[in-house]
Image (cartoon, rainbow, N blue to C red):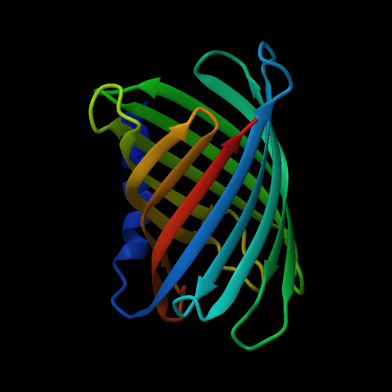
Length: 225
């Protein structure tokens, strides 16, 4: 399963990464996540994410996202669920665009070579302002976490996520939308508070326009109730 997933990511992402003309930007992303359970024994979990992203270093706000989600634990390794995202986009030309996004998600977590492997697939219905129609997008992600030593509160984290548009609209082309690759360190400060800090590379193929590559300083804060 893991090998098939990795091969699929390479096959889908390879053509997009081959383009030579690329616009480069440096950015900062901050994600604050609140999560909890209905009760200690309940299979139901909830989360709420607030995400802020800049461009041109930290000079301008690029997007703000607010995302509630509900998950159901089918087994000790598998969860399914869904949620809604409200995205506020601030183009460089000025003004603001809004997006309403409904999504479903599948999660699988297991032990792999002294660490934890997580596979996630998210399927999204994106309703973007001033677009010709709904955009269907699929986002497979593979994530690996490895403690620096047994029992350590620090862990090395790496993940890759490929986003693919399944249809074309006036604003977005069909095919690879973007690829995100992250490497960093996760620290569990207490049973309720965890941080994850590192470098994220975001590549967006231009589909006839110049490609874009963003070098991102990414910080995530997770609070569990």
